[in-house]
Image (cartoon, rainbow, N blue to C red; front, side, top):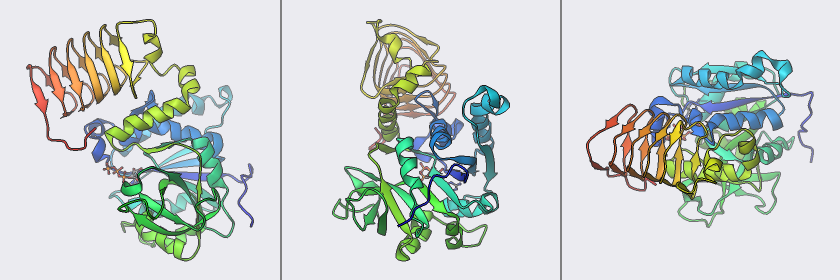
Length: 383
Ligand code: GTP
């Protein structure tokens, strides 16, 4: 069995799918596209791009967007602008960053078809959903190990409960690499068909373009329209790695994913000075618990606050005597004294006046919560 080698002279390309609406992360996604939402102190997509640059041997990353495309372009470009303008000053060469926009959503396969001219004669390319976090180093290395008789390698991940994902039926589930995918089962009722799921991270031979309908305006999904056909022709492998994995597209999963990513990247996060947590160490008046991440660029934090299982984004001002639990607080929010926030998401630039209690709420950006209210929305399975 021969496999594609990570030959440094033969560069790969990558497509990152950034065209989704991110409805489940509203109201954060009202102002910030899902791939750019803060995650461990950086826009989420930064970590993925970094992984591709360091481990994927890529010379071009194509961002396949639809709505909010201009915002995505501006944020991504600004992340690497120093290295692009000053290539000699940085150790790592930044690949070409290309942005392509779909007038209407084309689906995960339609988006790839839309990039075919950009792929050109490049033999192999990655396709990544832009909302999954994992150990990019291990996963990318495994993906590159594509058997030459196959068209695609899918990163599989073992999960405890596969019922909300697409499960991969494998020829030999015990083998971690070059494992042929026999079939796909979408959201199974239980784990009887296995618990290795499609992680939304792929490495393809360019021949895959022949399996996507040659119609620019056709909505096509990799998962439904392309992969089952490839599996039938024995052209798909899975590799699965000892890595955490999380789709961060829902608030609860976002917080868990952030905590898992933080655990495996603690040194880097410390080096880049992204978290504010450390500064609390000698400050007995504030308490942090659970999957909590406080951005180092929070403008101000008072005393006697409790943070549990929450994320507070940059630019926020936090008063005194506040309790924030199971919640995400968007950029530049002002939380005045003695506020309680639980099971809620606050969009960017919200002011909560003192002594408010906010429970189970989603609050749109730029609102002022003035009255002493208890705000309860009927959100089931929210956090
Ligand atoms: P929700 O609205 O919360 O379901 O989020 P989403 O719209 O991002 O959908 P989903 O999580 O299913 O999308 C998975 C990945 O595919 C994400 O990275 C999306 O950006 C991407 N994606 C989904 N549909 C399209 C599309 O039509 N075009 C492109 N370019 N990307 C897409």
